[in-house]
Length: 116
Image 1 (cartoon, rainbow, N blue to C red):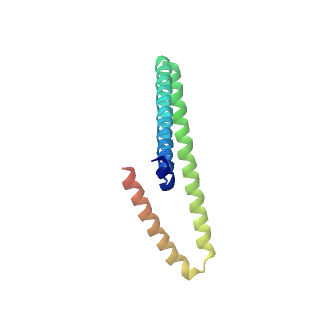
Image 2 (spheres, rainbow, N blue to C red; image 1 turned 90 degrees about the vertical axis):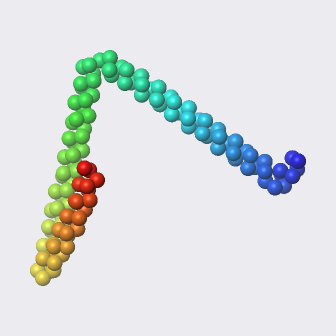
Image 3 (tube, rainbow, N blue to C red; image 1 turned 135 degrees about the horizontal axis):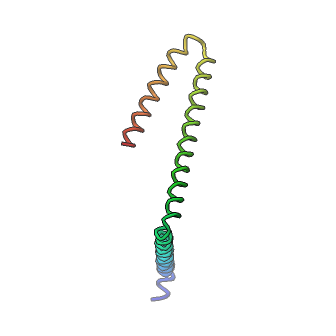
């Protein structure tokens, strides 16, 4: 029976199945440890209202900074687009400008639909 498994590759498949199970157990254990750490951190934060407020304020600043960064990128993109349009021959500026506006309207509409 063992020789037959060796010849047909059955032992190799069993070892691979065993290793996959071991990986699953390790991954599950990591997730359990993470959950316990998260619960401990939440308890520490909940026990200290001043710390909780400080973290809340810091997160607010972080998201404002991210929003400002996105806004800056949008402004830079707009300026680059305007520059690119100005570099085109006059007869193409209107046509390409209209196409870009249509494209941005469509993308913005899709983005807003997903956000709402």
